[in-house]
Length: 125
Image 1 (cartoon, rainbow, N blue to C red):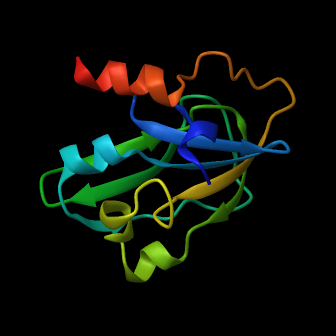
Image 2 (cartoon, helix red, strand yellow):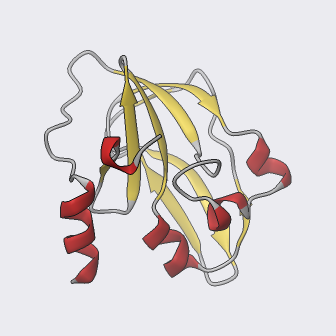
């Protein structure tokens, strides 16, 4: 999964979209801000979500953060490896630390997401 293929939200999630399915995770920047992640509540596979719905909760040594659905769709998978090792988000946020997969709703609007270059500029603030 090359970083050039990823899209980013202004709430610090990355999306990798392939054939109508999107893999979602926290960005390197987000995991750095959160600190060591100690627990993640895996999302419920099969649940339909609307844009803005809470997908899951991530707990770090600093805080508890909710992750919101950047697009509408149905959750098709959750990264079970995070159950045993939530720290994967810290060590490989944009790879093995992915959080969930979703099938996109047919009318999902992907135009608002940033490229890697745009996101880098966004986080320099």
